Length: 162
Image 1 (cartoon, rainbow, N blue to C red):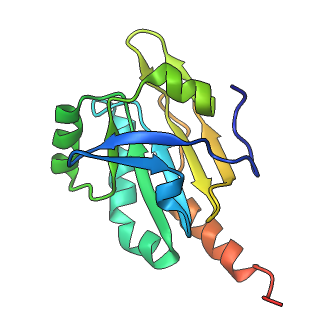
Image 2 (cartoon, rainbow, N blue to C red; image 1 turned 90 degrees about the vertical axis):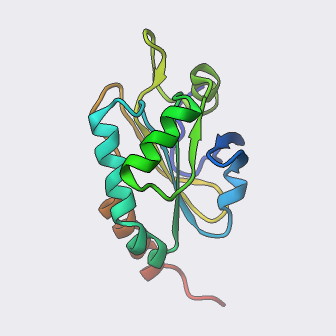
């Protein structure tokens, strides 16, 4: 799968999320802006820092109309421990099939052990990609201030309704 770029439709991706639910992206996020994060795993300090940053920014993200969802190959237990350790309240997907997610989105996959490299997408209200950030290693990822700034800019420069 080629990498997803601006204007591409985000593919249908069903996540098993904590609480015994499933969430289908981008449909579950339709009607507003969204950030979809793939993180390497609960063991990754950079991923932990990114997820904590998005949690700390949750009020500003919510005020800006941005919903967040994150996904990894981690087990449900490891994901629940991560959520509890950092007080994460946005949906966390677990048990992702790294190869299948890569086929759909172009995300890079670490071969051994198998996990998704850090990947982030900002989506518009119709599920179209506004920004994609692909990393082939531990660094290079979306940060909440950039997402908030982008959405504020887009809202401020949106065409007036006819």
